[in-house]
Image 1 (cartoon, protein in one colour):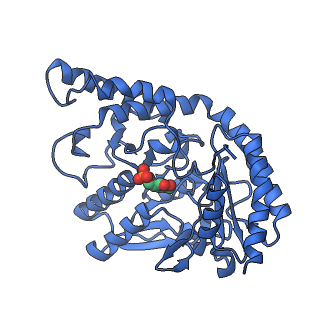
Image 2 (cartoon, rainbow, N blue to C red):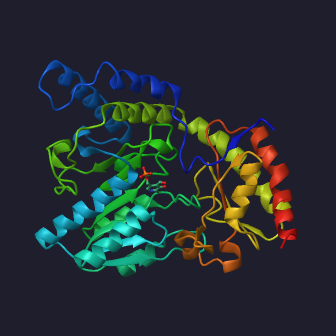
Length: 385
Ligand SMILES: Cc1ncc(COP(=O)(O)O)c(C=O)c1O
């Protein structure tokens, strides 16, 4: 079959043709350093200023509240480390709260702050669908809690958290709230005022922008410490010459996504639901992971009993379908991801995970092909046991 079906948009997306076009001049003729005083520098500085303003309009925030970074992981690191340093310096507290399904960019950063810098962290559990309980959150808040970081939407199971409810709880206790919106940015509303967050991480390659560029929204006066020292770029909060073409590309990609996301989401939801229903109907001993309705429009994630998730990905790859699984194979010993472990799935299920993530170009015939081949692949794999 000539058809290739890319169902791994949660891993990354292709760059939109008009995003590439917008970036090209800034790779070629317009190469000035935005910190330079001459006209070459003025032009690239102006391109960054324009990108910042376009993004601020979409996020409903001020342009100087946007800090450009090299990726979502860096934005997460900057948020946690920057706020932790400030809390330490001003004696504002020693305790931070994260959820048990955070991306490693949050989980490992929080653990590093604990192991090497003496902060206390609480890892908040989620229910079987991946949702945070507001009561649980209230119960773990301490007088010395200075930051809560809970992701907007999860990368593996697509569960979407009630961010504005969670931020309201944080603010009742005078605690700052950060959200990793890397998976959410391409599909969910990003209005900072409505979400109520103090800090928010975004990465361009998840919404048809280039890889290697991201941003951190930080409400004015919340972030004063950088985790990368050097020059005074980005208001002194992120040293290093800005990557002008990628920043221009990120702004263009976000503008395009803001305009078309409602249509794309409606289309993807129909296809996603068709896929979910048929998988659950036709494949015995299968479950949907994550929440049935509080989930990203493009995420269909499953667990199959008695299946090795990594082997399944290889079988699908041979059938020209790109997908992913939450289990990592370390030295021949498969282990479920921390997200699937947090859902407390039985070991038989958690090793057999599959994430199919749709994109704006996914169509009916892609879904039909998967509906046709997936039950057979699972059946054959089970028969081979
Ligand atoms: C939820 C979440 N946070 C952070 C990241 C890291 O983003 P980046 O690849 O831009 O570093 C990812 C990437 O998959 C993600 O899904």
